[in-house]
Picture 1 (cartoon, rainbow, N blue to C red):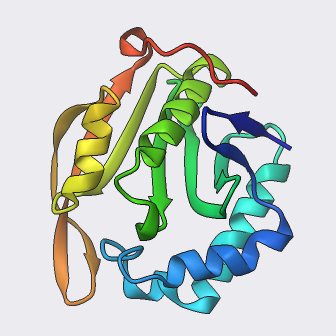
Picture 2 (cartoon, rainbow, N blue to C red):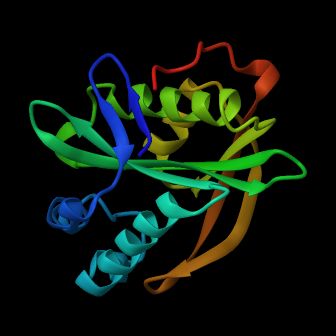
Length: 183
């Protein structure tokens, strides 16, 4: 089981007992504001959760979606880094955080640890994030992590009744200065 400790958080593989807390997180308004509404359905939550558990058992392991745990509260989010190309040493990054815990630096703290894990432990050269252009908070987070905007993909996502643009941001291993997280 992967465990990464930061100053305030514990990032760890999901376990079956986390399903109720994860379902509650996904059901909170605001959690899925920039996701298809069906991603908050109980069937989709169980499907995603099953993927996270399965990924933790893969060997070699290329996908990490970890529970973000605030010890005094419990599960407050999910964060991941996924190797998208072994030969090109590329990975994607994404996170979700309970809206009740926004604005306290938890997403940034967890992201620094997970992206650092991608560089230091997985040997990635480039980590990228793709987020909806309208998700200003996610773009700000990526930029605070040292990611640079690479461009906008026009109307490449469709959910609800509309098409959405996505912004791609990335950081290279040569730009990443953080020391490895404690594992």
